[in-house]
Every structure is written in C-alpha cells, then in structure tokens.
Length: 136
Image 1 (spheres, rainbow, N blue to C red):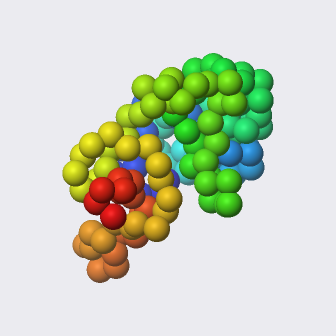
Image 2: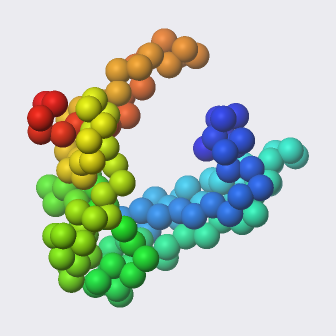
C-alpha cells in the first residue's frame, strides 16, 4: 500500500476493500487510513469495505448480488461462489484469462507464480497467476 505506484493508483479514488471473512480488509483499511493521515500529498476519496467479508455477503445474497465470479481461498476449499448461481452464470462472469494463452479461465490453483524480476529488489515477483489446463 505504501509503494509510490500503488499510491498513485489509489489517489483521489474511493477504495473498496474486501476479503473472505473481513479481518484482513479491516487491517488493510486501518493501514491505508494511517498512510493517508501521515502523507501530505496522498489522499483518497474514502475507504469502504464489505463488513464480514465476501463470506457474509454471499450468505446474505446467495444468488450473488453484485458479486461476479468466484473468490479464491487460501485453504482446502480453494474458492467460493454464490450458492444459488448456476455454473453457466458463473462461467459468463469470467473476466480472468490464462496468463500464457490469454483464453478465458477462472480456475485458480496457486501453484503457478509470476517469475518477473522486480528491479528494485532483484527478487522474483512470485504473485500467483492463472494458468489454464492446456498450458500447464
């Protein structure tokens, strides 16, 4: 959040935070508010968050409400999606693509990571990326 390029993307915008259960986005919101208070030339139009996280939102709106697609989880559940949304509707929501062949793909499994080297540190990016079955 404190990186200059991130601040530039968030500057003068309303920022929405969300996470699975609500804990991490509360912490991230508090951190962003602290950064905003401590930096003279950085201000957002406010920070909003999904209270209780996506899990609570999807229980409240089992057909999905405004949620599109799936939420990747870092545990054995792997992902969560609206319980009353059809597979066809979920597939129509797909906005992600395989990072290699660029075909629409929504299954994210976390075993593939970005290998781009970050110039400032010389370390690999290591952010998990979407890779379809054909390219694996």
